[in-house]
Image (tube, rainbow, N blue to C red; front, side, top):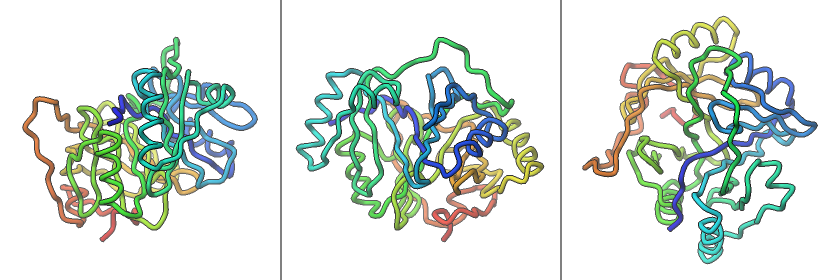
Length: 285
């Protein structure tokens, strides 16, 4: 079984890199690190980068996960190949673009591109947010799934994830102590459904709520609190229709815990215990 150490980055195609970078810095609060003719690399914490905007079709999404060693990466490639998932081993130029020592990519069962990386670059510089949104780091992603049970089986049996909870057919999956790093939401498409950044406190969420409203950014859900993870949240829409989330207070599930996954019905109160109603298609009944 492949062991994912952590989620590392998300790469998102956009029709207008300039507009996307303006959003990420002026609205979202990330730090622009490097911009070239094809991509913009943005930081949210001590990592070299966690979000990349690519001059590519808007549905061109890739999520990167870190493995511990290059040896594990080689073993993972063989395991995926045996399981019927063809892998692409990154060239030296592609490794440079991703800022890693080595990586491979493949498509998970619903079609999303996943990178597995080893020895990703770290930054020697302190993270300097472009706006005081209180961001402490990139934390998780939602993915679209065309077959939730099938994809859950892949993520748990092949990539070592564990189910924390279900909302209807949607599994919330963890790869470390954090309640979930991957959430799979049924849809007739593949790719990234939302991108989450953790913030320090609920005060940060509320400050951003009023700021986003003043800036005319569409609020899609919240402020609210998830009964699954316990996290307080705010979802809003960015360029190309990508959904972003701030959250804080997420539940931790330690290895010695006797925690058991819970089944929540697919209804609004399973997404928000305070009564907020989502304006996100995958969250609607």
